[in-house]
Image 1 (tube, protein in one colour):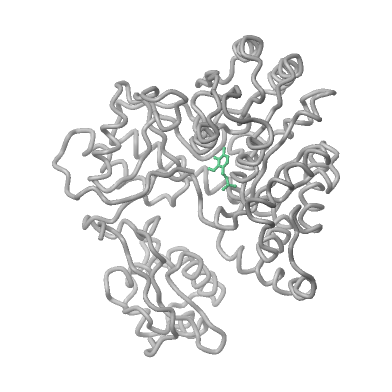
Image 2 (cartoon, rainbow, N blue to C red):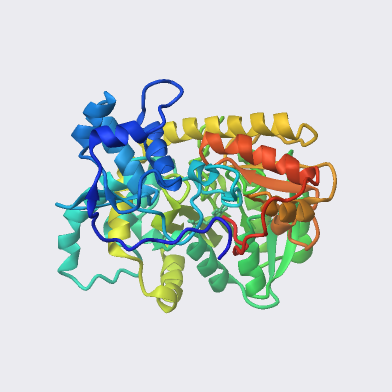
Length: 493
Ligand SMILES: Cc1ncc(COP(=O)(O)O)c(C=O)c1O
């Protein structure tokens, strides 16, 4: 078995119980002296990972632990929620809460940093965890709604009406009038993207894509044997003149753009460029597939208007906007959507039926509950991501001062300039030092390009970046690698 993997223990209720006093005595107190819920969850997780508390131990009742630690019961409740959400605890009505390990893979986040014994820090996924407590609340609301749906057949290829309406209303509120018929709910933005490609292009068709771009989009194009015309995105952003020229010269069937906090560049396309690109696409009859998955992750600037709102008259029929709750709420929900004309939505739904018939009603009910909370949860999420971004750049500046970057105004990633074309080798070495990162070429349209770049997301908690940067510096210096290369799938988000 690969280093750092953990195996799920059987999910059965605990056969032993820990008292509040016993657990309190085992917890390492936080530096600040008093436990907040995050510190408490982290301390409990730590006791599990280093064997001080066994698996399948029943944790003390919330009130009892609160008294033993001198904290509020809400702190303990939130800590237990966090433990459950991250897979370190399990609860069942009447049986209490007991300790567990997450399923299948190395724990992500600070738990992965227990010591130097080989647990992996995964910096290849630009995907934050769900805000604490959020899913539990939303699930409660969804459960109350479920019986209404359970008495029908449950197949909704377009998405449940409530969610289509909630998504449409959000576009309307952002200045883009939208009817529910214009929304197709999908299994993440990725399905919306795959369906759009399947609808619009086939083998040999030209598609314009930014370079670098989101790898799973490029792979989906390659998988359909489409011919990709790259246009550069740099630290300075997009060059509308180059996009215009590429459109004129190749007249692609479609163009795939990530104008909102681009993955991996983090840039935001300004409104006048949006108009220029839309105008150029109209002139060549090119469809626009605009991926707005990251639109809610504005860190230094407010979230932009929807692309379709600034695209200008006449673009609407040939524009598919893609969105998702993955970055604003949680990727594990797998809820995304496509917004297009009602006619195009019908075509996309026809295709989707051949993929998976329809999405899960329960997940969509959770999504409805989350959409109601979106405006409240986004500001603290942005605040937390700013802290994580700061922690990452501080750690990098300390350990690898020769690397450079431009701070992105939003999104989830730093796009680093290594100064030398060493990314693939460095990423391979970094893995043996216990850090998974993606070299720049994974994001390039052409193999072997962007070799002087590394993408590092700041989606993990702040504590991760200091040891991660230290390990990267050791890998860069060619220090002896302490670990065998773990056997991991090469995937990004
Ligand atoms: C630009 C972009 N599009 C789509 C996705 C996939 O999103 P989802 O999880 O909603 O499928 C991602 C995930 O990282 C992304 O960065």
